Amino acid sequence: MTAYDYDLFVIGVGSGGVRAARMSAQYGARVATAEEKFMGGTCVNVGCIPKKLFVYASHYHEDFNESAGFGWQSEPARFNWQTLVANKDQEIARLNGIYEGLLDQAGVTHFAGRARIRDAHTIDIDGKSVTTDKILIATGGWPTKQDIPGAEHVITSNEVFYLEHLPKRALVLGGGYIAVEFAGIFAGLGVSTELAYRGPLFLRGFDEDVRIMVKDELLKKQIDLQFNATLASVSRNPDGTLLATFTDGRTLETDLILTATG
Image 1: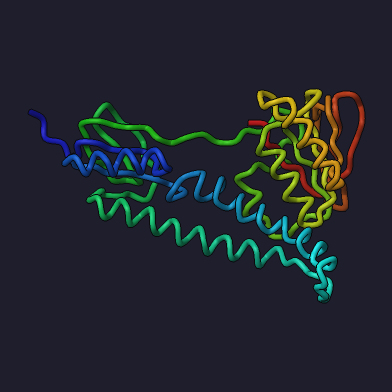
Image 2: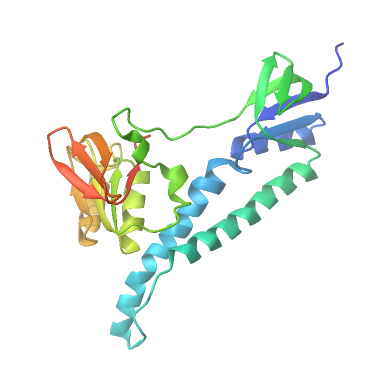
């Protein structure tokens, strides 16, 4: 029998990778993991968790406005984007530590770095090589950008959580729940927001009543909804703003373009 360093090597420590590594180790397997970027994967770092924190922040302005009708008096509320991002980073760091602790407690060896598969039983991690009986690839997915001129000026949900400054105007592209959520977040934080989707109505696959209700609620929040709108190109103006051109010839000037199309 060939002697390997590990019984199982898991590439990627998101929710799936961490679970597989922990359960395997608890059954007695010698397990190692590798991750080059986020401990905890998309959900913890650039997905569910930080998004919820941003959603909570975006709702407070409505509470402040409504409180006046219940007798509360206060100075006009002010929002600080840098404070939100810093506190978000602090919470994410705490969760990163919890995930790392879960692996440690299960007896899993973790390598911080990019893992490359040399052959069926050999993994290279930043100059170090280890052998393993089985390899599990749990690297998840990555947001994509449209293949259009000027795509380098567009950001995805990976970058939006680390913006240095909150834009005054934002264009969100997409019709799924991520695009709809970020349109609501931006609008709630005081950003003049437009949501563009290539189809006649967003949230395809959801109940029709839900789709219509969400559309009506976004309109109440002064979000400009543009349906049957497909982006053709993006260019940067001399003053740093962005010019979005759609396939029907319409143009739109904005400060930030977030694509959430998959």
